[in-house]
Amino acid sequence: MTRVVPSQAVATIEQLFPGSRDSTSQATYSSGQAGALQGIVDLVKQIPQELLILRADQYAGLVVALGAIEHCLLEWASRDTRGIPLQPVMGRDLLVIIREALLQCPDEYPPPSSADLQFIPDQDLRDSIRRDVGAANQALHNGDWKAATVLAGAAIEALLHWKLGQLSQAELANGVSAARSQGKLMQKLPPDLDRWRLQDFIEAAGELQFIKPATVDAATLARDFRNLIHPGRAARLAAECNRATALSALAGLEHVINDLS
Image 1 (cartoon, rainbow, N blue to C red):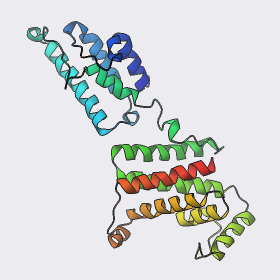
Image 2 (image 1 turned 90 degrees about the vertical axis):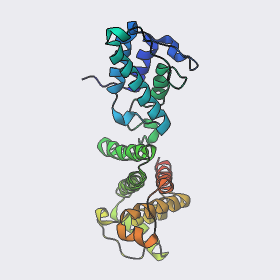
Image 3 (image 1 turned 135 degrees about the vertical axis):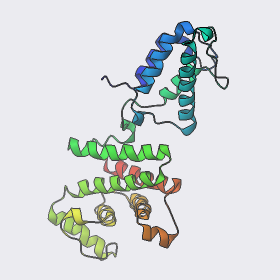
Image 4 (image 1 turned 180 degrees about the horizontal axis):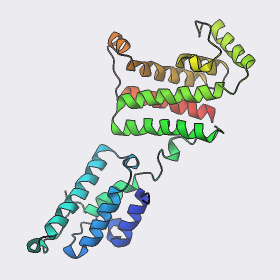
């Protein structure tokens, strides 16, 4: 099946109903346009859910508009109701609501704007981290604060793991030694990066000047919030993941991406 993206549905709406470009339009539609309207509904429903990145009110408007069209199409299927026009909802043209909502949605997920990560030469690794970055941003849009917080922290760790993995053992050891001498790392770290904690990656990357001091602070805050996934810690701190933790974690992630770019 051909992949349907938001811009394709927008282009179809504009082609079939040019008046939908006017945000002030309050057009009504008749049963003679049933085929075109059904085609638009079917097209929009084929758009992958992950591309419908919208505010709650925009998403609700899209769902209501599609539902109103479908309901009227069913009514038109009855001979007795074919003369009843499809009216605006809440004073707005249904196709304008749908078109404007889809204009806000990306055609690619995760959207390139969320993280290009072209500084990572390994395409498979780059795509994997991009998916985590995109998923963290989508979770934020969806109000899933815990997922956004955790995924942002995981992406930070993956990025710093990659960066430090480019160093020789001697270079890495020097950075770790310097961080330990300043009390930033309290224990000797294993040579295997897979056994490091997020804090270890942050402090070592900061000491090696891969990330700026402000980024170290932001990433550390993201780490602290990510650790709220551990029930014992959350109970001790009487804290939980919320919009603030999600925004802080994503801010730390953006700082790390900017410094490594």
